[in-house]
Length: 234
Image 1 (cartoon, helix red, strand yellow):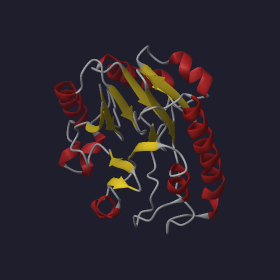
Image 2: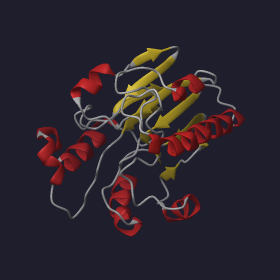
Image 3: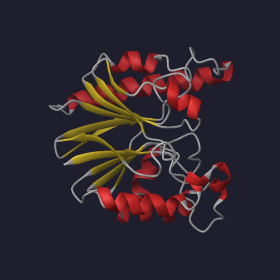
Image 4: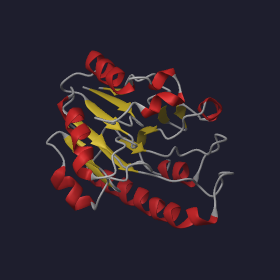
């Protein structure tokens, strides 16, 4: 089994290809993601989708694209909320609405074929130069959710370690470790996937690869050129 990661897919069925204004990588990007996904992901694999999944504002419309993702290869697709996922509703209601092969995470964990995955949205951290006073409440909440998610993951007996799925990176725009990363190192986290960033200078600044024993993956779809990234292989 393999675990793949991709984020910031910004699917937009039935809408104008508005993302194309951000560069050639976004021209017909949904079709590119689907084609590349089918080329690499196996039916027994897991796919971690790190937020900013669908542009729709309402869950009913978002489900059009969610069902497309559900039908793509992969035993299970694990999703978290991004800052643009306005369709994300109360967690219990969201879970009831999801197709069979879509598993939402929000400060909790799941075990699939022996692999333990937990997830949160994350947020901009106080040591980031772009942090503002209004960010404090959301940051504090996400820190609580991260501990809650990691504690839940430990209870699932992660023999191969914990796979942590986030939207915001556990690093600042300058590449410095945040309190999220410090907390991660207190648990047996083996992989961490994150997205959110779309600017080359931020991509270049972000740490990637093995950092203090954690395999860190930037999975923004434009960074990956619309191809899922191999995060882990058993």
